[in-house]
Length: 114
Ligand SMILES: [Zn+2]
Image 1: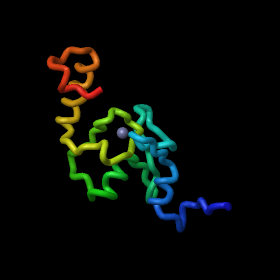
Image 2: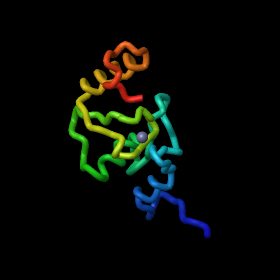
Image 3: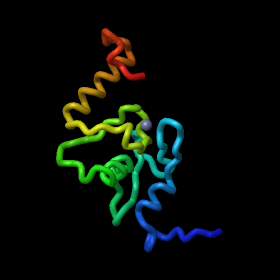
Image 4: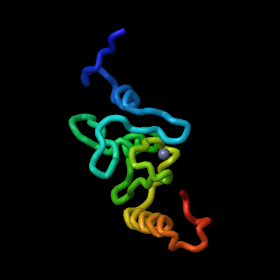
């Protein structure tokens, strides 16, 4: 059956989940990714981060200055259970922490998620 794929009359939710592949762990964004591997989703004439869109459907708008951290470290993942809301500062700290973990600079390593 041929599906109507125009952007008019099709709910953003429908368009969004059409582009997602759910695996046992991550829900992967199959459409446009930016250079850092984050999904981009076009809605209401704007291009926004796919994982932020998914989060906002469930939790409401993300307050100014807050960011979403991928606990799973898969940047194209849009599964809200894998995201946590942090301040921009905390996000940078966590990125550094992950790098330190990757280089085995953190002791004890139990604090690292691989
Ligand atoms: Zn994930």
